[in-house]
Amino acid sequence: MTKTDIRPVKLPPEKAAAAAHALVQVGSYLAAHQDLAEITVTVEDGDYEPLALPREAVELLATMLAHLGAGHAVSVVPSDAELTTQQAADMINVSRPFLIGLLDAGEIEYRTVGTHRRITASSLLEYKRKDDQRRREAADELTQLGQEMGMI
Image 1 (cartoon, rainbow, N blue to C red):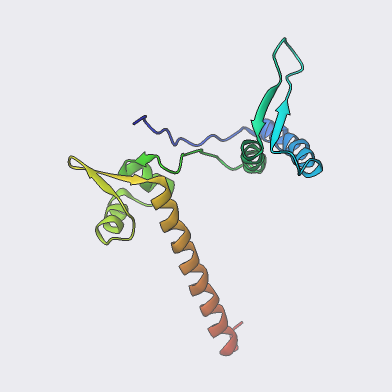
Image 2: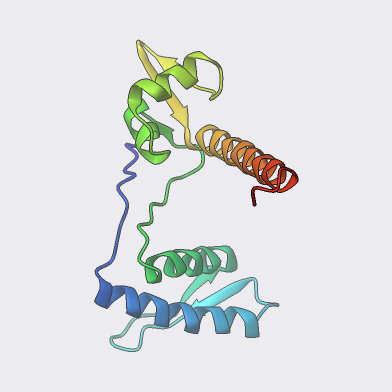
């Protein structure tokens, strides 16, 4: 197993503008060539051969450019990567003790390696998706109650 580095990358404002500009170019190319399963990229300076990329990789690049261009930090983590409890806590922005409580309560799948817990990124993201959905439903219910009571 390779060590997973989840440190986010955040661009300085002057580079964020370049990312936003690149997103426009990549996005318009993808939109104009929807039938292509492979995108060929050529570097203009140097004697490099054209690089053929799977469309999915270019779409992922476009997503990263959108976030970076908006000033957000981005991390790329393989879905089967095994995270330490601290890495997992950092990814969902909670404390490590709170995360361990979630693990012990069965909210997030994990496995133990010796005495250490390991959480797959896919299990963590599934928990986050479900938690976000629960929060949205609770907020919608509170909004509806507020409307019924004439408070909103």
